[in-house]
Amino acid sequence: MADAQTAPNKRTPLYAEHQALNARIVDFGGWDMPVNYGSQLEEHHAVRQNQGMFDVSHMTVVDVYGDGARTWLRGLLANDVNKLTVPGKALYSCMLNENGGVIDDLIVYFLNETHFRLVVNASTRDKDLAWLEKQLPGMEKGIVDLQERPEQAMVAVQGPNARATVMKLLPLECHEAVNALKVFSGAMVEIDGEDWLVARTGYTGEDGFEIILPETHVVKFWRDLLAAGVQPCGLGARDTLRLEAGMALYGQDMDETISPLQAGLNWTVAWEPQDRDFIGRKALETQKSAGIEVKTVGLILEGKGVLRGHQAVITDDGEDAQGEGIVTSGGFSPTLDGSIALARVPKNIGESCLVQIRKNQVPARVVKPPFARNGKALV
Amino acid sequence: MSNSPEELKYAESHEWARLEEDGTVTVGITDHAQGALGDLVYIELPAVGDNVEVSEACAVVESVKAASDIYAPVTGTVIAINEELEDAPEKVNEYPYSDGWLFQVGDVDAGQLGDLMSAEDYDATTE
Picture 1 (cartoon, chains in turn blue, purple):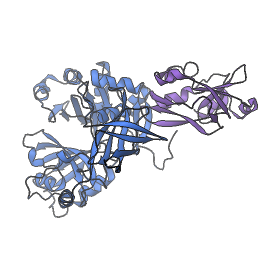
Picture 2: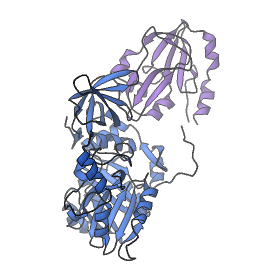
Picture 3: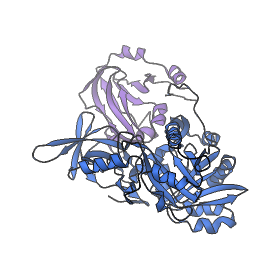
């Protein structure tokens, strides 16, 4: 079952912990990562109903320093960091190429006026860093400086009870700051002489924290969470949780050939102010004025089988006209106990469609994601 | 360390085959296979009466993670399928060698089982 490899895979500081927990380890973007520990379904339900934790130390953390950081990010990202006015506030954005295709999606944290932090995908690290470097010329040294933070680990603790559990493990002196965090905000707190970024963000559709902390601290923190009864969860549950939450996955739901307007990410593009000339803006405006012929929807399978990426979606466009779309992310939804998907389809799709699953065309219902969040089915 | 039942025969593609007293062959997937696939959520079995060919795909098991083809370990005609799996695919995870059987094949040349692996040889492939 092992894939042929050229270079040895990277491992997070928690690798030995995963092994000790009998995790099934798979290759993920060049990293040896846990896909599940025991039952992936139980891990999924633990997050929806109680609390679970994920090692996401493979994610790439890049700090952006300097007086020019904000201006530079306003040109780099499709969303506008000027929405970030309160230190700690976070923003989800796509980083586009000149054609409006998505190089990566990321979260940017505003820490202070000369320090922003980007968290980008692990599988796109090399091209992301190359792209960031490429956008630097013209910027004087000291105006914008980039620093990757490979010595930082990252743990996501998610679920209705996750915040309370994490609070119990944090020193009292940082309780006030962490307790006050609103959704999609973080606080830099000092713990044992080191900075931890505790943020109320996640990729599951549940409340909780994502914590960026030094690799030298992460093993103890992980063990403390385990002792507090937090369920370790692998990348398998992370994927079914984000799919239920209707969150896009880079490389599946969008890539460099797909614009945010085709991927259901219109809400992440900041058109105002009109004079903010971010990379990809002209291409998006051209697309918009020409008319976007596709959109991303949710599907709920009504017949037998499981929706999977790359399956063809057959739509009835009326007057005997048939359109075709594609499943971009599909799978089994433990919360709905059935199969769901995100699909890119003709924009005039009706309330139902057919999906080609092997030899069969299976009916599916068209819905607006998300499918489930905060412990509940929403469709 | 795997420890597959010695009375069964095994294919490289992780199916097991059991020769019954009446000469038919019952087919399932191994404990190693179900563990690698993870929680099963849907199983597509052949129909009773279908002819299956050795080493050809004849069923699909889908876990939360992925879909995998099941290859017939012998040639013959499907005489029974495990209908309980339609509502309870997790039986393959829980009891891969008993209640989690997939289908039963008749009209089998029993000599074909000689082409399959012993438990010891199979376990050596999964270590």
